[in-house]
Length: 304
Image 1 (cartoon, rainbow, N blue to C red):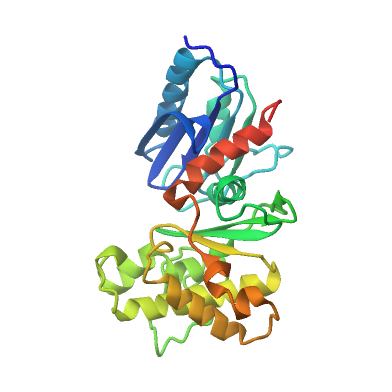
Image 2: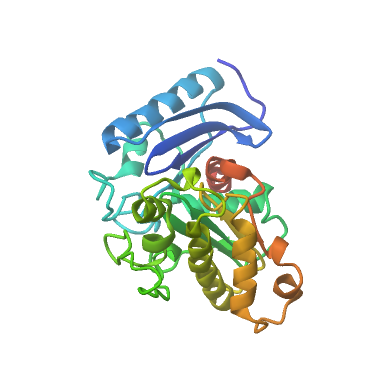
């Protein structure tokens, strides 16, 4: 066993298609990392447990584990269903007590939050959220979710923000697509997620040409949402992650359309003059989630 002079933390980025687990302290100190497919809760969490046990055998007991998961989920430590996945379209995961599965094996603090809240904390700690008091991290991939860091802390509330499910203006004469959300049809996720692109156009977004009409439609829907978030939360920055959100050719269209929709109403240079830094890609790239899980763990540890 290797003795470490400083504590190590465990982090889990729990996505609907893959899990990423890491042990370390931050971007410059990752001792080990693994990724595997999201299958059943029992099989997936068993792989996470095995990974952390192997790392504890090599490096010593972890100080804590941060777990950023797809949702909906219960992040309230005082709730009887804390650590559970709430009703979800992901088959087999509804009411899965994923934190309980970890606690059966580890007697250390285990902190549970949404994957996007964890990513937001990672960006605040090491990325484009550094020095900001209020900002949003929005992931646009297979699904859409948003995490908010508001006045120095992650935003929760009744449950947690569900930014991907806000309603949008939907001109069905221009876009007759009904949407893919099993709950709402044509909400933001239903109209602008990676899954919606594939269902609407018959091809994955990554295979579409940069001048394909999909992208103007995508920019319109995302910009409508970002304008709404700008009015309601008043973030100092909006960070766009995810496989679709990080497409380089899409970002300028979103920036320009958001600026046009706000139409000068928010009298801030951030929007009027510096839209390129107001709406931006993550500083941590596609590492925001797993590094954010480590940041969650560090906050939860006794010496964090």
